[in-house]
Length: 398
Image 1 (cartoon, helix red, strand yellow):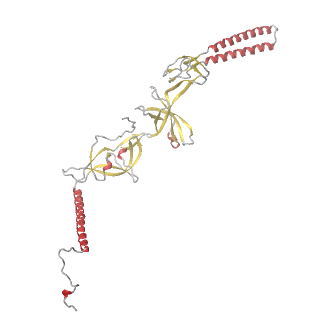
Image 2: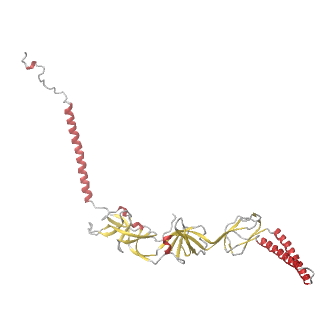
Image 3: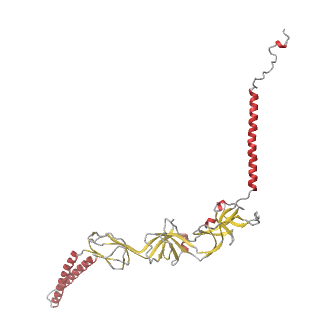
């Protein structure tokens, strides 16, 4: 048995200096290095965020530029609103009752005509000739009747003959009257005073019975028909003042309610109302539509703001008041800050809205720019451009 350790192949041999460490050890070292790097990056970002928060907390909040106005009371006239359609007081398409050839036209498109004015004449030569024949027959019948009546007095003819002559005379005269009425229909007259429309009929044109000659409209005054819900019927009455606004004209047109339909529409449950509008300049035309406002009740006083001042939300309507801050600025002055206030809003009128609760008169209220505000945020007022605040705005074309 060999007792020499040097001869034992299992004996530990000295490590080769150039030999690489085992794989497990290298993985541990790599993980440690990666962990140190990640920890350094995370720590740097945490420290950076803390420093930024400290800087932002210490930095002053820049003031937001807003527009503002003082809330004040205004008188409001309660009104009912609707959309109406203009209708002529009298309007008709002038037509021919019988057929005929146009001989003369006595009007121009757009003329103002009086009632009974002759507008056109149709050729009636054959009807006039027939009238002369009937008149001659009527004259003969009158002569026969007078002669037989004299002979009856002398008992030369019977009473039956005289009665037959009288009946024949009446018949002949009725035929004459009928022919005269037929000839009169050949002359077309204006049924009422009004304004002539545009006509395309020419002299020499043949018109059939019922063909349109021209339209005739009486538009001063003019009617406006509109509808209101049945629940608002108690708020209207004959003679009530209305104002009509048409987008074609800047100014409104005053008028009065002249009729209320005694029947409610079964489909809409609305009631038709008719108002009469003065139209001396003939600006309003049948078929136009417009916005109708009906004054209802006495004037009321409301604390009023532009609608742009209100922030509407499901949890409540709010405004921002501009109030002095509790803190002084660097220069010793008192800056202005925004204070959020919940309010109760009321009716609307044009660009305006009524405030019923939550606001005192004279308060300075932000009217635009409030979307960038929060409670206590500093503000700067610049009213160079104010939002719309018109109680009766009209459409503007750019």
